[in-house]
Amino acid sequence: MTKLAEVRQFAPFVWYACTVGRQRGSTVLIVVGFFVGLILASLNHVLPQSHFEEGPGYWVVVLVDWVAPPLAGVLLAGALLYAQRARRLHAAERAAAQVLAERLTGTERRQAIWVIAAAIAHDLKNPLHNLALLVEEISEETEPAQRAELLRRIQENVGRASERISELSRAGQRWQDMVQQTFDLFGTLELLRIRLQPTVRATNAVLVIDCPRGLAVHGNALAVRTAVENVAANALEALQAGGNGGTVELRAEHVDSVVDLRIHDDGPGVPETLKDELFSPFASGHSGTGLGLAIARALARAGGGDLICEHSVPGSTTFRFTFQAA
Image (cartoon, rainbow, N blue to C red; front, side, top):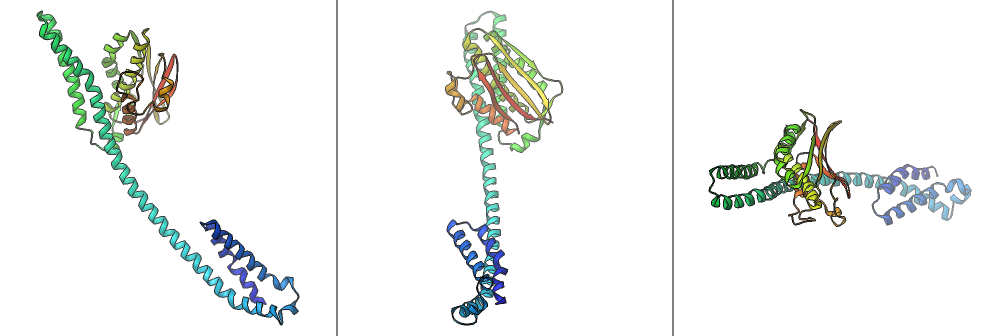
């Protein structure tokens, strides 16, 4: 009867198989088998010894003595085979994850190209429209001073359009390259101040920019400027729709390893119907293309940052850019 105790030797393997079983039916079967083994192993302690010297008890002893060791070996082999299959499955999952990561990288690059192209198309609309108006106006102007001013404005719009086209040549760069670049956020925002002045005057708004000098961040300067300009232009459009002017504030601060840039305006706020799809392409509450915020977020993320809408209620809307500090 001492060999009945051998059933207990393979109990850990049964328990292991139970814990790693993937199917509920298999787990129940293993648990039942485990308890049956425990019952057989404890028969010599429950029943009198005379029951095992003859009759059915004797044959139960013989059966357990002969079956227990092979069964323990089978369960051990099964556990080892399962562990081997689990390792192979884990390796296959890692390989599949690597392939998926490579495909996602390719998708991100193609998306970045689309985003830059969309940004250029979005920003070319205004200078081309201005050029058409200026050419028509200069053809009717006879005063030399006025013609010189119109020519200057035409040159300015051509330069702006040319600058946007030049960005297309860098659209294929890897997003890792953008993350590794650094630039001065203060200088970028000061350039943005100059670019926004015509719109600020047209909307009777006040533009406030507060950024520490020498604040360096990771990313591409042109991409970040385009992203911030899109959000600020949206804020100015919202103020213009209100008709009473207002204030747009851009404030940057260094917090730990990141730089937060908040764009706040006191306009009417984001319409409730747009809040759920605010950053979706072609989502617009006015006659615009609805690409500005989608492009801004994509450009921010391509440089390792992000863009969110912190809050928006009538009279107070705040967007926050997050950049990696250099």
